[in-house]
Amino acid sequence: MEVLITVLSVTAIATLLATLIVIADKFLNNYGKCTIDINEGNKKLEVEGGQSLLSSLAANKIFIPSACGGKATCGLCKVKVIEGAGPLLPTEEPYLSDQERNDGVRLSCQVKIKKNINIQIPEEYFNIKQFSASVVSITDMTHDIKEFRFKMDDPDTIDFKAGQYMQIETKPYAKIKEKAIRAYSISSLPSDNGFIDLIVRKVPGGICTTYMHDYLKVGDQVSMTGPQGEFYRRDDSDSYVFMAGGSGLAPIKSIIMDIIEKGLDREMFFFFGAVTKSDLYYVDIFKELEKKYPKFKYIPALSKPLPEDHWEGETGLVTDVMLKYVKSGEGKHAYLCGSPGMIGACIKALTGVNFQVEKIYYDKF
Amino acid sequence: MKQNPKLQTIQENMAPGAYTAHGFLGDDTRNLLDILKQDQFDINKLGTTHEEVARRMRYFTEIGITSPDVPIVVDDIYEVTVDDHRGYIPCPFADNVKEIKRNTKLTNLTLGKTIYWSDLTIHMIEKHGFYEGKGSFFRNDPDTLYMLLGL
Image (cartoon, rainbow over all chains, first blue to last red; front, top):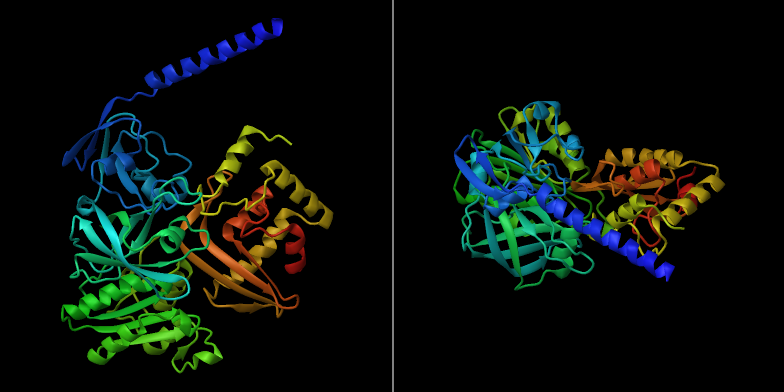
């Protein structure tokens, strides 16, 4: 009997404490309505407090670029907070320079709205939209790269600059319980505005690339936001050097084909780095362009061609091959897309032949 | 052995879908504390340290970085290939460390054996003594690392 009374007493006290915590949480963490003032009164949003700045803006159709969907792992969702944010969190620190900290830059996914907040964002962020799209084809490009073609359903057209990217939202699958968001560059032409093509390389253990490669099927609907990114062609040069590897070919293809479609008179070198011949794709497309446009040169470089490849093209690191053709960066622009390691090596090679650092463009994610 | 709530939270971070599609525990059914204790025991038995193992792994990765995606022969008996992908991956130990998604493939040409690790693997071994659960893609037993890395 005594044991029963003790058990009941402990249970009653635990229940009471749990109830008090729930009630306290409701009152103490109830921030009520808060205002987000964007760009000095240019736009004002009334939101329910308690959510992250990133998700509150997204709920109001203002999409801040983010490649990780709010997990503080990409560092892309930076906004300038004039006032109203809490103290800087340890999760933000690795992504912010001293200058950015002094300027009040924060990761919007880590800023929780607890009171009225004033922020500044680039005007182009207002052009980013949410789309519903359906998969119309999936094509194997190499052993670990696929091309996905999407039809834009709602809205049914998209305006983007060649080189920009979209953010894809995955659905839960297998043991993955939560949705994930990742960024992929568009490889198709802006003029083909009812569709977009994305090229996705499977990352071992990657949540989103595994979904895209192994679970996404023709006919499936996908939610995406975009277009985003500052990796697009600047027009103050008539000579371009493009360098890519793997799925980094995507935005480069879009930019090159856009230049040609617009009939612009530009000198273009496109260096594509791969290990063996089986890592090359879209070769026929670029060979055909080369025939039609004498100012366009496509130079694939294999670092370790196999005997059965019967490769007669350029061999070695793509950076070394580039240096055989490009002796000076004077007046030229360079556009890079690939793995961080490849981009680092390309920047080093390009600056070695006098390319201006500010004329070398690449996506920082 | 029962583990404290902090380790329990870390173990949850290691589940499939939290930080990576497959997680860090493979098909290991032990709790995190038992995994850490067993690997610590094995490292002590080998007469080395987590830091020493991590230092050796980093040595190969740093050489591989000089030749992105392209295999490179190191010290005549190792072939190393490093590839990386966009983005970062946070450490599941919630220590505010994030690592580039960079993977190293090392083949010991003398032994004819290949192992893989990521930059995060090196960090987790060095700072947390964590070699991942059995069956995890980047799991390498201390014995295997000791033998293949020539420690």
